[in-house]
Length: 266
Image (cartoon, rainbow, N blue to C red):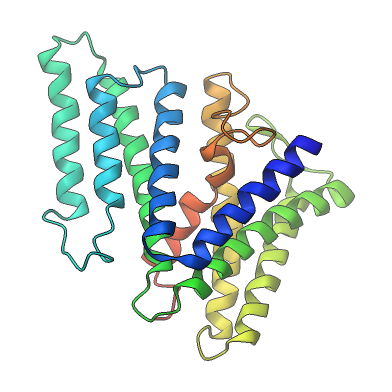
């Protein structure tokens, strides 16, 4: 527990400090986190970590995370165009290798690149929103996600009786999940009360619901594929906490969704 607390404090200070700083420093941290996250995914799926397919995945993640906005540049290819090329390259490897490389493995590496690259790209975009309030939006989403985690944990401990999804995550309960939603909504509403001109109450409630529901789904998704591969943690980078994917599983789902669903009012 001591190791977990110390790691959490140090990692939290580093992350939040660079988030406050913003710019290339914060963006660089996200690039590193994304590449490590993809490495964890590659290892977990039992692929060669630096084989040609994995390298294509690293490059695609890096492309999505290049600081185009900070450099005042337009990417030469849109994300959907670039990912189509990545898909073509990965599928071509199955042909070139005469099926020695399994198409299922290529599909997994492609999903991992989209999952991790897109997720971290939206986390970066949130800090660089065109309205100039990226720090507010980033902290609001993180706080809502963390509130959901805390609410689910303590509500589940005190009131949990009905298992949510025992075959995937045996400790999670329906009561805990509901508590997570309530806590996330409360925190999002607090941000709305602090800055009502930025965050209307309706948007705050919807964001709280999204942060909790989709965030918990992100956690369950991570639990599901770790269970398939028989591992406890995605990595060992953060002692007591696991890897990057263990810590960011909710983020990778929530940040893209609030943009795609147009829940951020700018």
